[in-house]
Image (cartoon, rainbow, N blue to C red; front, side, top):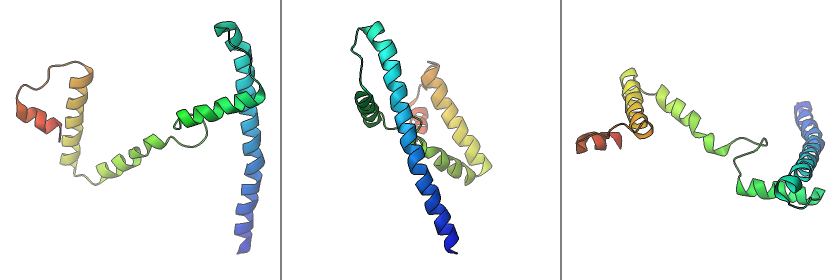
Length: 125
């Protein structure tokens, strides 16, 4: 029974060097791209390896949902909506889809907004 725990810890220990190598490789790629492109295009100075790592850390702080590491945290609602749709009756599902089609078509296609207040209140529900 303990062999399962051991395999999990061994996998975790194997992931640490892989994670470190991935960070080092990404830092090197950013540094090389910056030093190749930015001085010529925008007349900026070249950066060191550590400045490149700091630039990556800063970008992860400013844009936490982007990048290849981890999942996009803003898109967790997809599972919620799928589950919500599964619990609806077919009639409710069609009504829900029609309501959203109406919302999107009037907003994005610049179609005329509903003229009376009752239609607007139905859209906002």
